Image (cartoon, rainbow, N blue to C red; front, side, top):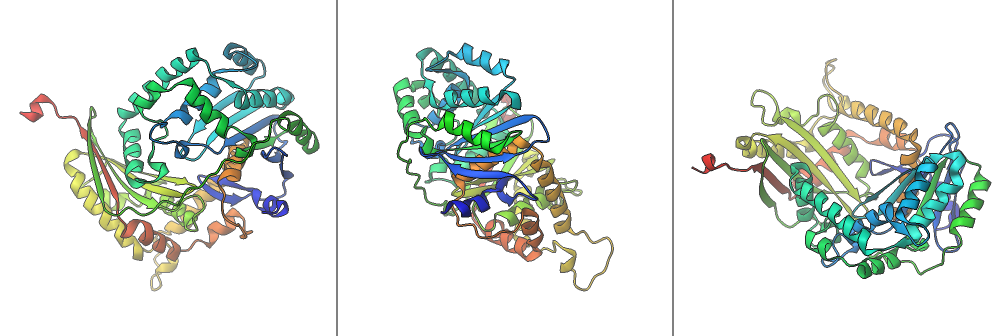
Length: 456
């Protein structure tokens, strides 16, 4: 894609997984270093802070069954370990001295690093980032230390009904796809991980041509471009890493999984395959998520509330990835109500094909108390969007993700608000029918563990 065209669309940033146009005049620039590192800069001088988002196109999707969890382990070691230049303790001291916030995250698609620092310490932040990401020193001592931390994280996940249900849902929905492997990995692989295996992973994926960098904050464009070229331009060029993955396919049959945990209430998750980050129906599904599970009175309480009170709480998690997505509806309820809640929920979702989301659907009615679900959802989403734009670190991370995950030839020049306003009730009806109404689903049930008295 030509640079001028990419510059015109790179001002899109991800808001809860969807790409949106930045509103109003902004001073930004996109360029690619000779070694392949993608860079996006945006001046935001209202606060004397600098925010950096750095992305590496490697996640659990790039693992195999024999290396499940190694990417997440690398994230821990880069964030908390030593480099070939400084020890862990020295790096911690440099971070503290410069007032630097530094964190990292691994997903199915990407590994990202987030940094915020007073703009007067820009040079130090850039130096630390380059050293941390591209000069990792793997030591046996630090590897064993992080193994213990990660194994504890996995144990906590197994005992958490929310995290466990999400993991089981994604494994079932994405079965046969690279996304089926959990981000945290498998305990047996973590225990047996060796430095030489991690080093091979590190050298393959942590090259500039497989990375992106976005800087948002208080700086001068020419000065920042020069600094980045001086600090990151010296990194050796390597061939781009092939990223050849197919889109997620619908599941062939319904899947039901049951687990017992030491909990007091049951958890029911109904999950569906949904559009990914680049899907044309992504924004319609965002609106459906808002209407069904967010706000003061989520629509899903209609079939699950009332006198029968089939669920104590209802929440939705719409997970969007580059090659597909998952729409998970999570209920907390009494174990005896699971079957009734499931039946009512599925029947309600099927009926959304003809649901009246907007006042315009009520052709022959003028009742002032008719709820316009569509307008209400758009209002909340526009408010969230405006709040998001004020958060420089989230913007930097979103730009960095966008440069690595956007794989469509974007010609739609409408702003996010313009796209949102264009979403109609029929769009919601069609999306609900296509993804929630008649599709196969995954059912995850987590119930309280039976006591000896229950068994008797």
